[in-house]
Length: 401
Ligand SMILES: Cc1cc2nc3c(=O)[nH]c(=O)nc-3n(C[C@H](O)[C@H](O)[C@H](O)COP(=O)(O)OP(=O)(O)OC[C@H]3O[C@@H](n4cnc5c(N)ncnc54)[C@H](O)[C@@H]3O)c2cc1C
Image: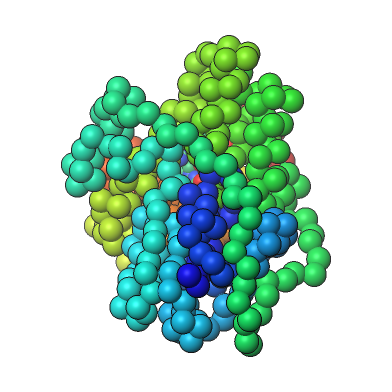
């Protein structure tokens, strides 16, 4: 049957259930990608990371006989014009992306075959309905740790369907690859290589829990988030390798803690599903006029707040597209709580800038810190105390001044 594989945040061959189903159940087919709204909002560094990862994905599927097309017209039109009968894709959990799926439902007659596959635990295995997701992470974690196992990964398909004769479409191409970050390389192979490096060559998984709050050295935390954000890494593959590491080199608090952080990631995916569009609109009551907020927001974005810890982190973000978790918590709290600026502006700014932007982790963490998300509490970071603790000698602040 004529099918397409709609490429979304799932740029991988390994542990890709949708791609495997497409391979098994189609007699002719192509992979298609079109820029999402979020991609169009992104600044160059994230765009380049995604485009270059698409380039490596194109090469990887070509080695299996597949082809990737770049769609400029809309997807329903392509499906209808080419009489496509089946569409395989990874199910989205956020509102805007779900709207794209609904457009396929209403505008085409193709059979839609979607799989939820970018979280560690499958939604279907959870012992509660999403609407009953515990309000507090710890309660969620205790339930799933006791009752849910991580499913096994699946192997990459051996062969992909061949394309039918296509008229007036563009095959995905980029001529040259250039560096956009000193440490982040595009694509699935680079993501898998980072696991190899961090777990096995450098043996940093052993000390992850003690070092993860560091801000200076790239190897203080796993830095797996860029590849997770575009689906070039499956969280289950990371888990599989944690288990192998524990068998071969021993389990400790650090090996457990990486799994624990992947549960946080899952938790924010569930929060996004539970809240729908509300995740993006939950409001705090402003104390300041719009003009005052704008002026403060501009200073925050351009690293001119006068707080050297906040400004250093914003400089790092603006120059590299990266900020540590410690930095993100501090600048978010500073914007929402200290400067009293709408937290949504900060979350949107992160969406544009972060190479590892992920809608659930970003908006979920921002809402949590603004005190409007799950487990609402008044969490205010004292940035100067934080600087004294996490950048005692001021090396980080001098580096990014
Ligand atoms: C305001 C704010 C915005 C954020 N925006 C994003 C975002 O857009 N994309 C993103 O991937 N993460 C986001 N995070 C979460 C976290 O900061 C990053 O996942 C982490 O810094 C990535 O570095 P790492 O891979 O070295 O993390 P590690 O410490 O090595 O953790 C391993 C993995 O666990 C997951 N993880 C760790 N901490 C969190 C967390 N707090 N929430 C959700 N997942 C977590 C990530 O997938 C991460 O790659 C945000 C956090 C805050 C406070």
